Picture (cartoon, rainbow, N blue to C red):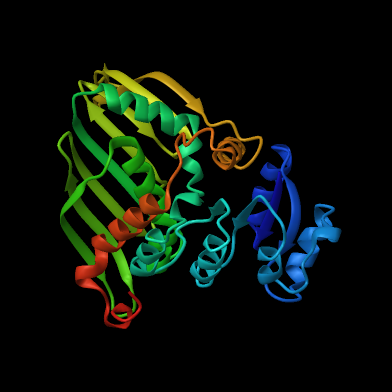
Amino acid sequence: MKIGFIGSSGICRFHISALINNNFNIAAIGSRQNSVNCKKLAEEFNLTESFCKNGWEEVLEKDLDAYCICTNISITPTILKKALDKKKPVLVEKPIGWDYKIIENLSNHKNSGQVFVAYNRRYYKTVNELKKVANKLSGGTILVNIPDSTLGIKQFLSNGCHIIDTLRYVIGDFKIVKSLIKKNEFDILSISSICMNNKWNILLNAHSLIPSNFSISINSEEKVYELRPIERFSKYDGMDIIEPSLDDPIRKYVPSLNKTFLEPCEYKPGFDEMYRSFREFILGDSKKNICTLQDATSTLSKCWEFIENDLPEKFVDFR
């Protein structure tokens, strides 16, 4: 199965390793014209003969079975549009673009059903365990934490979209009831939101520059099911109470850990399983777990919905 690979950033190494492990033939690789980084990437994976010095447009002209697009987000929509015109399956890195209206237009393309969006957390064993649990439960409260080491709206869109997509994948879509935003004149600092659907009440906190980790915690039926970080699943059932003593006069409430496991990560988590699914997608055999272009558009739109009513001045036109 011949793949055209477009991109040269650091994450491309994870994609190429998973592609090779799943017996894809990377028959063409390119990014910008005469890209030094892409040439080095091709050399690193013994793909020198497949290197397209004229860039991504040359890749799209090759006789291939499918494409993989892992480029800078600013150029991704342009490349994706041209790839869709080729009527071939496409795996594309997320969130695809900054402007959900542009992505929405792409989702109306006659070949939009050929797009597989690389939300790799949908392929985590931890995430699918939480999804299985959520489907069985009657409802409750979900706590979502989206910290980040970098400040900014673009960071929330490019990193936070992972958690928003994961949440939508696990429990279905939801509506935002209220968002409280803290900002300065340059950017948004934090988002605190109340959300809900017909089964769950959701409290979401997105706060930059705090010492915390991404997490989703389901509280239901006297149990807690938690991803913290997303690569670790834990189930807590019951509480151990340690009474105060003369030596330690503070009463302690310790959740009882019933089950826990880590996501296997021989490759970047989720990537190997994602590319197995992409192979099936190309062959038309399965659409298990995939994020469609329409799904990705809805996730990006949801991310903007958290913030768009209270944007700092400089981001009004950016939207």
